Length: 240
Ligand code: C5P
Image (cartoon, rainbow, N blue to C red; front, side):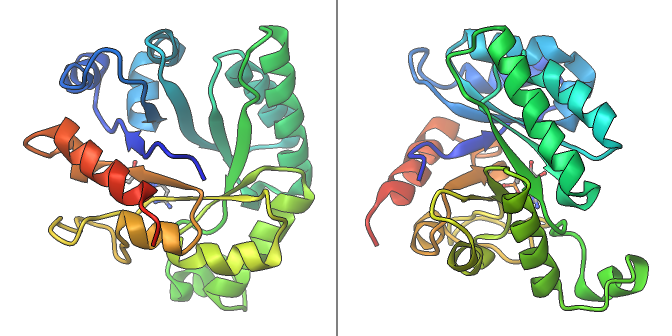
C-alpha cells in the first residue's frame, strides 16, 4: 500500500489549487489527484507545475475511445510524468492494452524516473445495479460486472482498478497480489458524507486491503487542511 493519502484537487483553476496547497509546509511531498475540472481549465501545464513542486500526480481523466485514439492520447499523458492515470474498462481489453503501451512509451521518451501505473474504472460508483441492467443491458449483478471488469483489466496488463474499499478485498481475492485497488469514498466518522453513498474511514480502508485512498472534501474543505491531512494519513498508516 502507498503510505500517502491522495488528495483530490477538485478546484476550478490553478490559483485555487495553489492557494490550497500553500497551507501545507513547502517541503511536504504530496500525492495529488488532478481531475477533469482542473485539467480542462489549465491543461498539461498544471501537471508539470505540480510535479516540478515535487508532488506525485494521479491524473484522473478516465479515457474511453477507440484503441488507436487512446494509445496516442496516453503517449502524450506519459510524457507528463504522472504516477497514475486511468481509462474506462468498458473500452475493452484491446483499448486497455494499447493504452498501457502508449503510457509507457510516453514515459520512456522523456526518460521519466517514474514508471506510471494505469488503472481502470469498472462501473462508476454513481451507477446503480438497476440503471446498469436497464441502460447498459447487462443482465448480471453490479458485483459480478465489477469483478468481470477487474479481471478483464488484469488480463489486459493494467495495474489495478478504481473501486469502493468495500469491494477491494473481494477483488484482491480474485486477482494477483500486485493488482491494486485505489479507493475514493473515504470519510472520518465526524465528516459529512456529501454525495458519496458508501463511505469508509481510512483505517477501515486499510483493513479492507485498499492500496491507495483518495480523499477530497474532508481535506479541501477542512478549517485546517494540513491538520486534517495528518490525521487521515496517520489513521491510514495505523495497523488495524
Ligand atoms: O470529496 P471526495 O472525498 O468525495 O472526493 C472523491 C474524489 O474521488 C472526487 O474527485 C471524485 O470525483 C473521485 N471519484 C469518486 N468515485 C469514483 C471515482 C472517482 O469519488 N468511483
